[in-house]
Length: 203
Image (cartoon, rainbow, N blue to C red; front, side):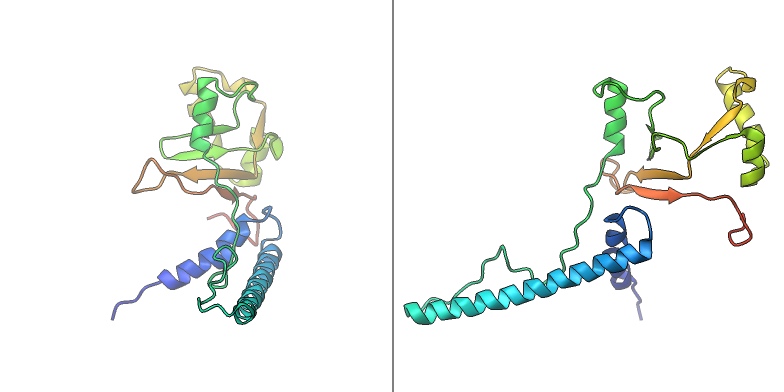
């Protein structure tokens, strides 16, 4: 017997992912529940208005003695599905190309949007934290941080001594190209980071 998770995966998209993308990345559970509650109210309203329009159509038929069957307005007929609005998807790859070509004037330096061959990253305008290299090494439990930074500055032919403070972002937006269609892209996703703790140990 063949098993499939398509139904549950589709439900996860419509009931969790889309409501989460419609919020502001705060209090996910509360905002998802509020979004689903509003969607259900809109659905119930659409059902009620469809029945009302059908009843109104029947009354008009009887009063005008028309033989043609009344057809509800297709623009208002939405009882067959929930309306779940989603945020407009942003193309960070295109934004990066426009910045590199000079099409976007007065951009920040260095730009807060950058890409690799398959992934685009967008940082907030201001970092979440500024800390020294030793402080970041201790707080985040990254024993190889100094080696990685030394290799990076060596690649740039720069001295690491000038880097007294690090800019650290707790949140970053990530967007990837679709695996089977490199010209298309997935919706951006938010990645949140926090230092390791007893509740969330480093793995």
